[in-house]
Picture 1 (cartoon, rainbow, N blue to C red):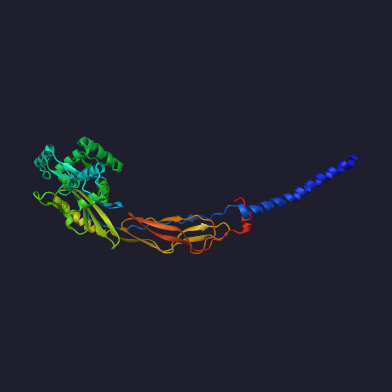
Picture 2: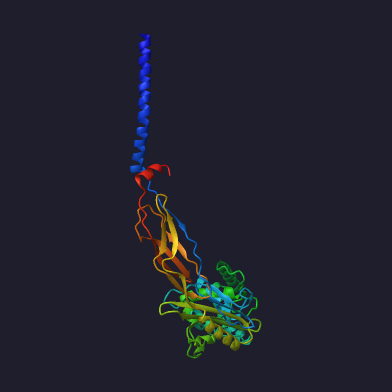
Amino acid sequence: MYNARQQNEKRTIKNILVTLVVALPILAATAAIGYVLFFQPPHQVTFELVELSPSEPQNVQLSWSDDGLAAIGAVGHGLLADDGNADEQVPIASITKLFTALAVLEQRPIPEGQAGETITFDQADEQRYADAIAENGSSYPVNAGDSMTQREALEALLIPSANNIADSLVIWAFGSEQAYLSFVNEMIADMGLEQTVIADASGMSSASVSTPRELIVVAEKVLKDPVLAEIVRQPQFMIDPMVGAVFNTNQLLQEQFVVGVKTGTTDEAGANLIFAAEYPLTEEISETIIGVTLGQSQREVNTTISRGLLFESFNGFGFIEVVEENTIVARYEVPWGDDVEIITNGGITVGGWLGGSYQPEVRVDEFSPPVGLSQEVGALEVTSGNRTSSVPITTTGVVSEPSFFWRLLNIFN
């Protein structure tokens, strides 16, 4: 009896073990199939970018004066070419007034479409006018009790480059010259200008200094301000009929395309000029060229040199083919099939500085298959200044879903 019961127990255990040996693989296979069919996450296709070379810069020749400093830039591009002295720090004379105008508008903004607050001048302002005349500096007539709008004061500051208006404006806006200097130099630091120092409002101080490179940045900021951009392109203005029309000190405004910006001349600084011109590449596309010439012997010499540099710079702008049509830019890596190349659906030619180098940038979408032939899967972009051109990128083949058996074999991948 006892032996029979032991045998039955052994037989039961054996049957259970046999059942487990047979059933477990079946259950595991069933679970794997169920997981693959219903729960396995989709397999994503990864991609590898093709290294794309930037466009080759052309050799743009500009004639630089043996005297002074000079540089050419453009809005959105920064410095483009210089005479080797783009980072030399020198006095900037009345170009300083651009900083004055920017600081005043930051402290006391003018609402769009308005003329700003009314400024009433007092005896101290009248004395500042007399002092400007005595210093043989540029000025605009002011008597105690006179008033003008904030915009008119900015016109008097930037068009005839009135020293007395510069001093009166900062006292009106900031309360004291010292408060203004603290504000403006903090503003300069925020702009990332490390070699610019402003020591006064008018630029009569030779301690107000900057570099051609940094003045290009300042000019761009002025041209982006709607109030200042409109003022610096005016060849003349009139506030008081008794004073009459007052003419801009920037003689380059007589030339086609020129839209500003500011002159500055003292004995220590020499003759200085920042000029800007909106040069059309097509009817729809233009480049705003910025030129800086500093430290010339006379204003007339500076104007002549600046005019020649401006006209030469026109030849430095044009169109550059950066990417050809059907350029391979990436490929999808498909573990369960053939890799699929991705190409540009069109080419890119940009307008800009011919001496520049333009780098294509590719954005490829990651996805789960399937993907069809010639399907758009991202874009290629090229930036020139403030403009970005783009074309779609598309597949050259089909990316099918992985087969059931591949998914089963790669269940843990």
